[in-house]
Each structure stands twice: as structure tokens, then as C-alpha cells.
Image (cartoon, rainbow, N blue to C red; front, side):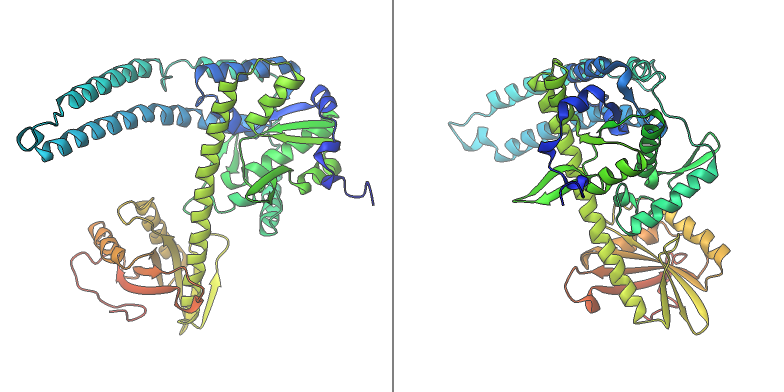
Length: 468
């Protein structure tokens, strides 16, 4: 059966040297944005390697668009780090001095003198903060000319794909993506919930783009370009480490083997690509040393590796939380099933569930709350529910706030009541319940409070479930 399943061939059988001589090199948005996060030396070495590839670099139109849209966000993120570091140093200094003062060593101990430590730490902190201020002066400002942006634009001048033809062609791709997401066909299905907490659309060139379909658009543009340009080898460089791009095998921990076999097969069938290789930035630079004889230092490889690892851990943490939230949402669904004649999951928008009882229609939007003091998009969620209630004809619409501990119930209730609005209708309600991640779905979600959002200082009135 040799040759029947080329998408599963061993990587060792591929001729990397030929691929590096013939391939076009395609770069993801995160690779370009990371240039703003790297130290100057690392950034310059990576830019030099890109320059060595000359006319063989290329980026999809969607990558170029997302780079332009997110560049200032990354610059602002980098600037914010200075304030965060400064606060951390000052907090540590204040905490150290306060704790030493509590010990009253000058009164209670004849041998321990904390003054050298205090003076030394004070000088060390001051020196560090002065250097931090000096470095901050050289940080790229949001409104200043951006030399890095100019360099990137020169590197990819004439090497950017064409934009979509019209909204119809983009909407057709969205429909394809939605079907693929349901079947977990790569790439991009792990971004399917990106619009869960609010709209993720933006408009460019008269076309509405949706963030959750970004990876799929990039992939389709790569295939289309390879086919029309006759490129038989493609090397794609991305810092996206999710499994909807990479084939991962659990062998004493996850091991990344290469591109997903589905992508290799699709590249051959629809892009007429004989050789599809994928690298993260570290892998790309390592092979650039071998095949391009590029000058890449160990310090650069380490920094690139560390940033990729940090990004992967952050994504893994986010994905873990998202899976936990999905289980909590299903627990709420099971609870609703036990209380209504019929409950339907609403996959196309807001709210999450639509239920019916005694000829009345109820809507339920589920929100997971990890910290009652830090609820994201509270105002946006409330007003979206308000307008949905006005437009959709629900008898009542409830936002189901899910916490993981009963101790959070009172704090969340108080926070919601502090932000309550008198002008909100009686049938816009808040439900607070606790989710326990157990193996028994019948008791996973337990509701505790149910009240109208316009109740500021009133006692609980009419409720859907008679909780009080």
C-alpha cells in the first residue's frame, strides 16, 4: 500500500534541501507581530533571514490585513509592560520594608541589623527603575513613525495575495468553515468560540470579516495562490501551536509530528502542492542556519523558543478554561431540560438556549465567572440581552451567571445589584448558580438566585423557578 497515503509518510523521507531551494515561504500574522516582541538582536536576525529569501516570501491578504489591524495593539501591550514591571518593583520594595519594620529588629534583636539590606535593595531597585525609564524612552510610540513596519512592508512589497473578490465569496467560505468546524476538520476549528462573548466582525474594503474564520481564510488563500502561481512546494511558518494546525501524538507528553495529514492531503488536491512543510519560528530559524547558511545565534533561538512556549501555555490555559466553560454550559442545559417542556440549543447567536413552557418562550444566555470582581463585558452583555428581549419576543430572557463556589454567589449578587439599572424591564433577569465539575450531570449545576436586573434595593420578587 506504499504511496496510497502520502499525507502519512514519514518526515524523514522528505527531501528538505530541495524544498528549501524551491518553496515559497508563507508567514502567519503572529510571526510578523512577534517582531515587535523580540529583543532588537533577535528581531534583526530574523529580518535578515527573511531578506535572504528575497522573492520567495509571500503572505496571504488576510495575514497582511491582520498585521495592520493588530500592530498598534502589540505596541501598546509592550508599552504596558513597563508600568507593570515598575508596579511590581515598588510593591516588592514596599512589602519588604513593611515586613522588616513589623519585626522591630532594632528594638528586639541585638545582632540582626536590616539597614544594609534595606539600603542595598533600595539602590538596586532605583538603579533598575532608572534603566527601565531609559529603555522606555526607546520603546516604539503609538503615534511615531514605525521603522519596523516600514521594513516589513518593503520585504513583502509585491508579495501579498489579492483580497477577496466580494462578500459573496467570503460568505461562501464562512459556510464551508462552519461545516468543517462541526466535524473538527483543520484548520481553525479551535477558534469556533471566538464570537461567543460578543460580535467579532470588522469591515475592510466593504467586506465583513469574522475573526473566528481567520485561520480558514489564510489556508484557503495559501491554496489558491499555490495553484495559480504553480508553486509545488510551500513552507508555512506560524507561531500558532494549536492542534487544528499540527499533528500531535501523546508519547510521554504531546509530541508535534508535523502538519495535520488533512492539510497535506488538501494541499495536494486543491493547491497542487507536492511538498507542504510547516515550522514554528524556532524550527524555521534552525533550518535557515542549515539550508541558507544564515547567521542565527543561540540567544536568538532561545528567545524565539521562550516566546513561543509562553504563547502556547497561554493558549493551553485558555483552551482548558474554554472546555471547562463548555461543560458548565451543558450542565445548565441539563438543568433547563428538567424545568421546561422543550429546550433548544441556539447555535447561531444570542442567547445560548431557547426554552418553552405553557406557550411562553424563554431565552437563556450562559456566562462563566471565574472572578466575580472581574466580569468581562458586563455592560455589553446586559445591553445585548436588553435589545434581544425587545426584538425577539421572549417572554423572559435570563443571563445565567455560573460560578464554581457558593462563596462567590453573594459577591456576584452584590456586584450585579450595584450595577443594576432601573430602566431595565422586569423580564430581563439574572440567575446565579454554582457549577461542580463532577461525573454526575444531574447535580452539576445548582441555581441559588433569580432576580430582575432592575431590582436595586428591593427584595426578590417574581422568579422563573421560585428560588426564593
